[in-house]
Image: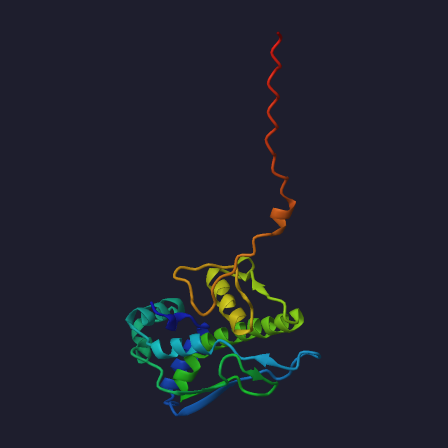
Length: 220
């Protein structure tokens, strides 16, 4: 199965309804924040790279159709109109790392309606999560006032991949580097290794070897 199956199930039923009713004209889906909390008047756009990768590779294959049919308890032939579906639309977006304001679209997808509907969940996932992390990371950088900030998110995120994405976003926001090392390493954000961690400071002092006893004085 492909990433085309990483979606909310209602997106599949909606796309099928559009195809059945021949509603295949172009539609534009816009992603934006309606309002922002007091004191947080901006967002930092992020997630575009992975969203574009997904859209470029989007293709509904036979295994995807079989999976949709299985979970919907429908015969595979009912889902065959989705077979071979690719993304043929256009994307307009704020570049990654740029400031975005309330009511300003982070991204707009214009595509035939079934396509735009079926890719919605994955695109929302990528931009919502990564924009949230990047916006928080920039505020950490601003609060540090020139002091280096190191990213330790791998120990807190929901899975390793989310941690690696957070490391990239920290670099985007001006962090000194991530504590995370991944093979192969990314040259754009080399890892940092602060060595005096709390466990080092709390560790017991090294035991120094006792001085050897002086040799006995010979009796004459």
